[in-house]
Length: 476
Image (cartoon, rainbow, N blue to C red; front, side, top):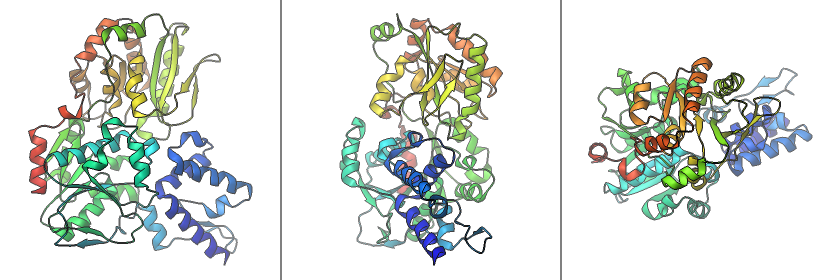
């Protein structure tokens, strides 16, 4: 009886709060990172329940996310799996919602969006929203389909969007349908289109497209090579298989597209076009920029996300400490050091000096504060450059980043002379930090380089005829 209670409680907990929220909270709990390292109310609620459960010895019995550990079964520590749990562990790619074709349904392009927390929504989701808006501008009716099981309130979402002025009218432009509870199938017309936005949504896109018309591709919005997010494992194999499906692709940045094109098996017979996500930061007037810099301490910031492996937290932290020890910042009396991103961490540079983490900012705060930083470190172990280096360079920051595969110095230099590119190794990153620090007082040069940034500053600059052609070729 106890075993059944444990299994039912585990599954119910997983279903109610959502897979990603539970795993993120359990990771923070096990690593003792604190709830401030988490995003949104659901993750933090799970974390608090785990902490409370610990006081009555229930947490490890009821809330094991990766495995159900029944340590009371004949003293053997038996791990029990069933089909439902295994589906949860694999993002339910073999257990996608049912699809119903209705000839009388309106024709729409269905943008498949995974679970999210509006309080801590990331740049990738804003990319999805802008793609949905662009498809709408191309003349198609768009429906965003929330297919993951998570808490969703349309009214809360509508109110939250008011904090993001550029998306305040999103719900008037596109439909949104939540099907995470699977109380009914997703109804589509025989002429609908589909957009996958993350690797496991590609499995649902494939299911929908095969139901409607298996001869036509879906559109895959590829924002990184997601196979690399996982070590060699089931998820690594499943995510890699998504790139073999029948789709056309809209790929974030030319470096990522070039990287994907190296895999001939991914690209055969596909139309693939790159685009650049627009910068979010805003360059102020020269007078405001100059007055902000003069007469105050210089500010160093690095993109600090300890829980996201591809941002190479350890390498960044070690490099900053080494640069500090080698006197890159002099005696550091005229410097302030900050971390920006996710996680509640502090990095000791000396007994008297630390890097402190800035609380997570809203998009508006991010846009309005980026120009206040002087030297920035933003690393990314991926062919995708991330948007942070361009956001910072375009408002006068001197940014140190790393090369990776197709993402080389020539690529960054063509975009901004405010960007310094290093080998992803401490000695070379330290060299680049010193090079950036040497130019920190050249306010005029930094500002001119920011003005000359060769990167879109608004989404109206992003879309070209080749993108319109891709949309029409896929959905018409």
